[in-house]
Image (cartoon, rainbow, N blue to C red; front, side, top):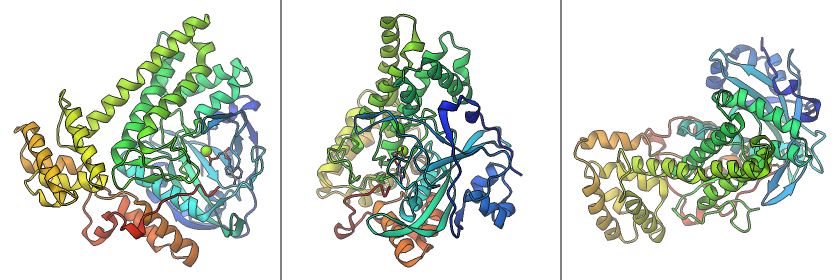
Length: 486
Ligand code: AMP
Ligand code: MG
């Protein structure tokens, strides 16, 4: 039925701990991701049968599955913790889909593991629904991310501040190897393991690096480029990860570990939602800086592989890290230009963009609505966007510059269509996500979850019947803090 090929489990024993998922009293499927299951070549009828639900919930270990919890370390809010590891997740194995792509299947909320420390190894329903919805929304927005294959109820309650329904999410990723995985071995001075891990990551994610003159340098270059592009993608849709610890940064360049993540409403680079991010370390506008900080931690672990001589290795690492800024700017400014309807970036464009972004903060303008309504202005209809500003004349003054910059080569309707393809009408707005979770947890009503999933599968399409989801929160609806729920 499923054919596993567990390359990570073939690495030495110190990379993971074998572990079995916990017993659940009454596992029940909340949602199966049919499209993803099909892409992965899985049999939909079987997955929805009792045997399939047994597999999805970790209650039946399929032939070839070798459940393991991965070892890793990480910097949490800047402080190094030498041992974290999968404390509540079990990697069931890897499968290679008909499209040739290798994917991890991981059950999160699977119970205690040797890495659980004080935790119960479990996940509550709210965070499971948040991860499912937001990761799928990110995929539909075109941003590299882990995916959600299924959400399940376990049939029991778990203790947090109150008793909450227990749940689990079956997560799919191109791998679960993190910056913190390298740090785990670096902290132990285990250079052999770092080399094995680097070779594994090259073979799995960056095969072109294998043929490079200096493969480990090429690996570092590619991880840096992937992260620069990823964080630019986040900024362009207003995404705030919330916990960019090094253990939550995938070396494959996928968005991973959706905790207290959220989308920004009013444009303000200082925006923070996470209740545990008291100093704003992971604020919206800090994300590029933090990504580079995390990548510097990765580079440090690779020093023994970069050159024989330590000074030469440091030079290699610094050279690689210096490429982060230009790569990020290229992706970010290129993306902003496309959001404004421009096909390229000219010297004056950075100022054109920063002028309107500053005006948006001063006028409390919603980031997503601004760009979506600007698409109408490409066809001469300015009122929807200008009326978002407290002082609409600030938009008018900027619009004169914007129009001077638009080349005449493109017809207005074509420009509007091109802009709508990069400026989403719908994002998972935080107040809606919270309301969706409350409906599910308090009233066992999964209607809003299902409705939002359908909506967010097509974020760039106007969906008039669901237009209310495009609206930012009214002042009394604003969600000020988002909790990890761990
Ligand atoms: P996170 O903040 O979710 O990325 O988790 C940080 C670390 O804490 C990881 O090693 C997790 O596996 C672990 N962890 C989080 N929640 C739990 C839990 N309920 N039980 C055990 N370990 C947990
Ligand atoms: Mg994590």
